[in-house]
Image (cartoon, rainbow, N blue to C red; front, side, top):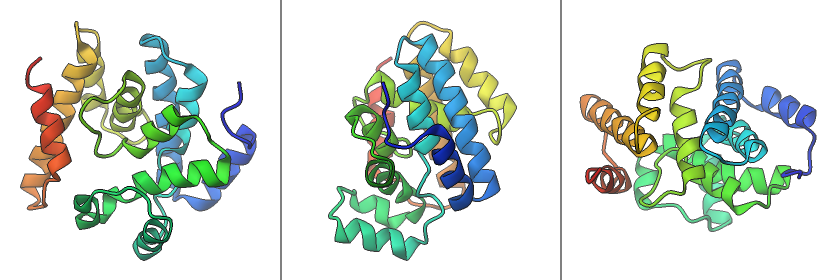
Length: 194
């Protein structure tokens, strides 16, 4: 089944033109890792590839342009996402995936939408795309990726890996003196009962 109205070649050409070289490599790596994790956890590999490839498609948009599109199109964005503009690309990327690439599959769109902040009660597919973004092989630290891949082998490994990722995110935000979105805290707390 096709999940976009564009060929892989067209998508790759668009991404290469519209993303920085590093972000393009990251997107390729995320697509690769998404497929690996989808296979491991019994999810649709083609859907995972599309979600991984397009998850950051709006990342290089100017922040003011992102805000304008989000407001004009009345996209559902939490107020804390406006505090840290680095997170605005996630809801906007879901919008671009739908409008520019014809993605209609709600699971793909939701995984793209939530790949940065996540949310409480994510689906297994959403968790896979979230984790793939953090541990893709091209631009992420190898030691961290290996740690997470090892945790994924454990019983309830997806949620344990998420807990580690959220813990590291919170530590990093605190160390840099940045505001921690309530969504991040809620997800972290929801994973504590493992």
